[in-house]
Length: 635
Image (spheres, rainbow, N blue to C red):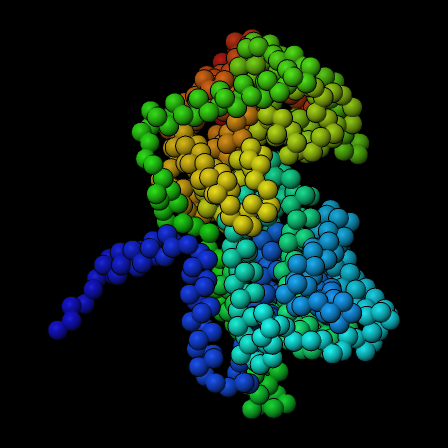
């Protein structure tokens, strides 16, 4: 009799298999999987089945490219067929006019489509949603019309007589040959796409997709990464286009219509946006399913459409969605004792601050010592229409102190933070950090200068794992190049390992290492606040701005937060705090500024602020003989 396994035993067995698969190099899994698929299709010994499989491989390559643009970076592209066309025409013209071998044309097809991606991406960087869709749709149609009117490319007739690929004297001219070549190119495309997905570039793309505002504010250069997304997506389209041209033997503008762009979009949405296996599943469904329904003749497209709608209703996240949670994100990393973690964080932070100070001094600027002015806000005015949210506010923050900003709701506190961090540009006034003006700089540049922040309303990347959120905060500190990420070079692997280890230390610093593999959306409100703090600290800032970090915390959690803030100060990080919990503010602050309707009405030490009549009047309303109520006032 076969013993029935318990649910726990099945779960452990599944986890063991999953962990072993996770430790297997991705490229080897891709090669084995595609080799098995190739062997199964070829053993079928049916040219029709093989031809359909070649088409599936082509659409999978296209889906991988569009997945970078739409699935990773979240940029809607309705003109992706343009990249397919440019790659196809580049390869076809080089083979027919210059008589090059197909494999020699591939680098040029990829290069030209990547350039086309940059041409499309640069003017559309600041566009979103409908406007972006219209521009990309126009780009696709312009490309098709250009080829339709270009006599050198054959005009409406296209390019005819494209030769078969030749591999060391062997002519590849059967469907089986094309299938092997297609699987080889698909394997390359999948491996490179996987490398990008698990790189800092891939995390930056996903962060932009989740919350562009937050991504920019924690150090991700959103405009540059959007451009990279179009370039990378174009390169994959060029690879598929070159393969398509030599396989068909003749191309013309009617092969690259808007309908093709929509079909490729269906591939990734159906499979699961951001999911590499989902792209393969989506291509299989979109290409192979209509062929299976061929016997239904005229109504097969209707049946296909109904099935698609049904699948999307039942699986709105796609047939194989991308799940970013990871049960054991730090598997294989060396264990560290809590004391060692604290010592490593302190040592690493001191190294980073000393290096930043050294660069600052080398540029001819004075490095403020402890107790000297680090941040200076001078006459800052921010106005929205007729409303002055910040009205001629001036104060300074000294290096190494905890400085709090309090005031009633709507007092202009968060708006002031936005002016300091580059999210908004003040109408008037100066903001100096380390003696240098930062007004007009983009938020990610200000992060690189040494200022971190959290937000009044939690702005985590909620569909990313907790540890990935913190790794995004490390973006500004690493300099891995795009080509290194694609090739997964030893230097890039070492950088990723160091980033992963550091994210672990910062999560341990705020007490969340055990929750590192969960999705950020699965955490409690208070724990999400802690993740935000860890993400802000990951860039090793000189100055960190906390916007109501105690919101949503119970008394015990607030007490733990006080300890975290003091530990941050002990690292040498200057803290500026917006908070409504007066007991917390009075306990940790060295000095306090009070804003009321955008005006600075008081500035001084906690005892002075606590007994200031103007503060009591503005913040509590007049209460006779009850000034001590200020310390007990909550949010």
